[in-house]
Length: 94
Image 1: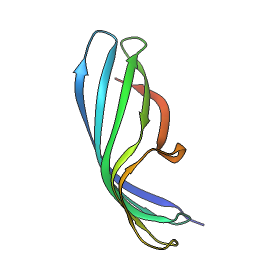
Image 2: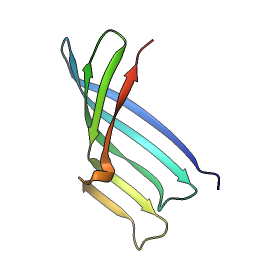
Image 3: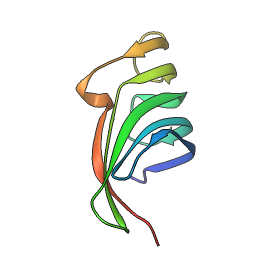
Image 4: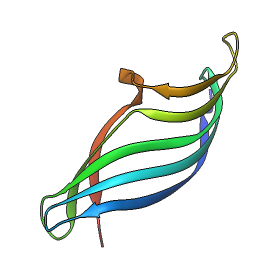
């Protein structure tokens, strides 16, 4: 089955020091395929720790916004702090 996802993310840095950044991500995402969520719009707080000039470790947790559900009853709006809303990864700057 083909799974697609289209999204737009705006990354705002709320605080920057020599080795870390506090982030606020504003995003819109539209999903299709094997998922229960058709789309979402909201805010995700996060932190980026600079490992060197090019690599950063990034962690985002939580979601504040609106999600349109497909297979479940009702849509959801509000603050969600579940493991589904935890994201950990790396970022490379060219």
